[in-house]
Image 1 (cartoon, one colour):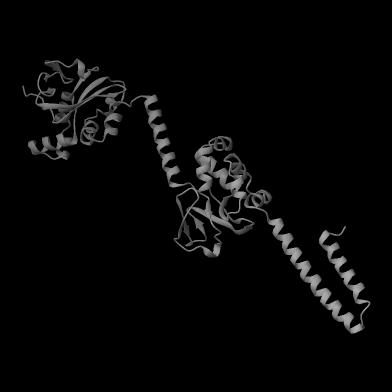
Image 2 (cartoon, rainbow, N blue to C red; image 1 turned 90 degrees about the horizontal axis):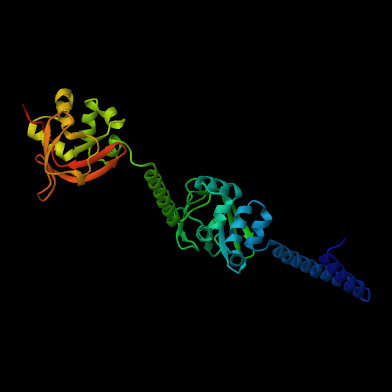
Length: 350
């Protein structure tokens, strides 16, 4: 079978050769040469036109390539086919199927879940598209370019060719309405990265809330203001007790409160921690057995874990225990509650 172009060229040659037969030999040769040249030019022009017709749009090229099935599905789901089939021109940094698989795994999503979220999908896809035709030879190290999505991508030529953190694995794939560069990772706009991080943090907080608060030691540690108190509990051998099944209410001095007490006593933290007998007496004077929330505190005496009494006063401007102001109340733990105080309670001497 002959192609239409071949049949057309043959017809032109036949017509010209018949015409040349009526001429002189010199004229025939000249006519034939001209005919051959004309046919060659016609054939080349038709071949170039055919090649141009065979390239297709960016979407056509991506479909024909076979390595961008997830990208094509995403473009269809986001209703961007008509856009990428339009005149453009566009430059598309196209993640391969392997790149999408890795991204889905990292995000903990299935392809179906991603395709269903069309808003996020559109944001991500348009971040892979730059208006205009940008060939690999147009790229320079450190250059930035605004995407159709609105945020910028960054080019890094220090080790190969990178767009943000994605490597360009195939460059300069031509299409009728632009150019494609294949990349080995899905690139995310900074706004999407921030949104995902915020969502992860919210999920972690929700999970922690579902699990409930930690024990007294864990809650104090998470608060970050009780490093000296925790070190003292460890030195006195009370950590396991307060982290275990013991239920207690702790009046917890802050690090600032401990610093002021050490200065008043003329001691270093190391000296206090080394005197475990005194340390235990002080620490057990900061706790009572059971859970006592702030609404149950009343003017009067309470017995601390070491058997000595402390004075509660709630009738003034701020609730107090002995001379310490209770600055925060009712911090819940799984095995008790913490009330924060602004000074260290010293047990009364016999």
